[in-house]
Image (cartoon, rainbow, N blue to C red; front, side, top):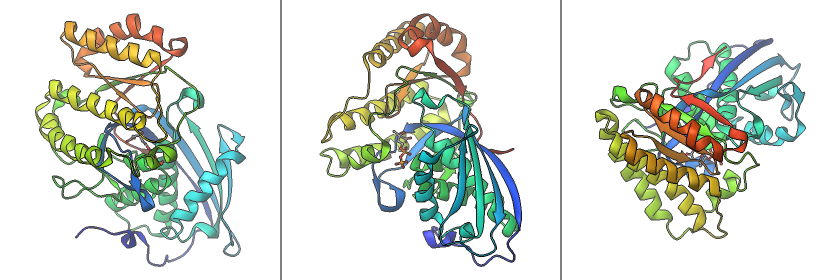
Length: 362
Ligand code: DP6
């Protein structure tokens, strides 16, 4: 039977541990089928699927100390890359409020949270997925010490469930190389509440798939994800878009299985451009691509035609470009990136990432 939110409320703990600490490293992920639009309580308007990254990650530690009595509000300190960060606290506070029901021990502890990213904060690379993923895993680790019998599957599922309440895409930053989040008719075990490792066959061509992230514009996001998702309410094309995500996921099943890269490229680029098309056709409307984003896209298309490779691009809600290609095409494609694409990046900056396996305890 499908799980419901209530299944994540724990029964009482045997005994609260006095103090301890835990550290987790959680990866970033890049969506192939995009999550864009949500309902109440961080329920996605459509299912999505992503590649887990390897290099881009957040490492978070929590030191916890039991309070003499349960506090009336959450008691925590927050350090980002060694410095106290007051301006990040409201987001964490909101997150704690959303998850308190599922982690009733939270107000019994004082928490010192220390977090750092493997990528520059100002790179325009979203850190909410890896950040909320790592935080959720640390909190689950504390719960595990109070309830040691929890299985690995339940642990991961609840970590993803909690991470989702922090940031939707974080549900996909817990476990697995290819992760599906959101209910889809072809995948009975899929859920709107948490991400799952993609359950069907994946062709070996996707092993060690490369993602070279081109930093076109390192400025702060022009549209926050909250505003972005809201734009899908009353959007004239919303229903067609949500239906399209379901169709694209159906098609991906045999593409993943057969390793059909010609078809893979079509779905991935279609999803990226649709995401931006949704932003261009909402009220208010936005153009998040920069001239250099378009230069890069056109060069990728021209190179793909003449090179016999399967390089393609995807985009997040910003101007940076993720260049995706199989490992066996790395020499050709990375050579092309260096000579043709890096000139369109801010100071030539880019990150060479690849498919990863999911979060790790440190
Ligand atoms: C364009 O996960 O950042 O990256 O749930 O409001 O935190 P919130 O949104 P967020 O949205 C990510 C949107 C996206 C596409 C995707 O990752 O699927």
